[in-house]
Amino acid sequence: MRLQTGVFFCWLLMAQSAQAALFDDTEARKQIVEQQKKILQLQNTQQTLEQRLASVEAVVKGQGLVDLLNQNERLTQEISQLKGQLEVATHNIDTTQQRQRDLYGDMDSRLRKLEDGGVVAGQATKAEAKSVANTEASDYDAALGLSKAGKHKEAFEAFDKFLQNYPASGRAADAQFNVGYSQFMLKNYKAAIATQQKLIKQYPDSAKLPEAMFNIANCEIQLSQIAAAKKTLRDLLKEYPGSEISPSAKKRLTALEALKLN
Image (cartoon, rainbow, N blue to C red):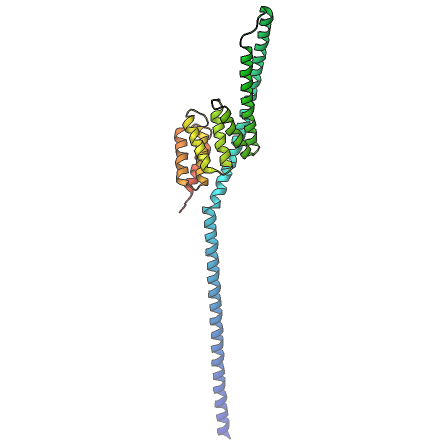
């Protein structure tokens, strides 16, 4: 009886040991599975972070540049609009003063005619010349108004027609610049560069040359010709360091040089 009891207790201890070993093995397997899950999660997280980093780098290299330069471009456009408004106001003052002089001159001529009883020679010719000058001024102002209103296609056509009708006009250089500016706003960048280069060649003494070079640089940026844009801006600052557009050109050049493009 004691022998049987001893055998029974031995068997019971062996069973408990086997069960404990089996339990330990199961727990170990669970821990391994959990660790594998955590490793997989970490790998997925790493892949997600790498994708987000790539997206951020793409934005910095691409659209981020465009946003930065567009902010400067909007400021440049506002300055151009203010300058245009000042130009119109100045022109209106000059036109008013010229009309007063013409009025006094016409009155004097009429008095002389009455006093002398003769006909003032060349009066008809002067009237015709004055009419042409007034038409030229009104055509230019109309084209400039279209540009300020954001109607760049119509402005391009109006300035181009102005150059055809008045090739020897004192406003021809300004009209040529505005043709190129309209092309830039219409995103016809290559044509805008050609137009502004024509301005630089045909009107080397024009006050519009610094703005034309700045417009060329902006076109080159939009065409991703960053090296060419940097050179154009450096040439602008070298040739026209005291121009009104030089501070904007300097800021644009600094922004381009700060970029690290592959």
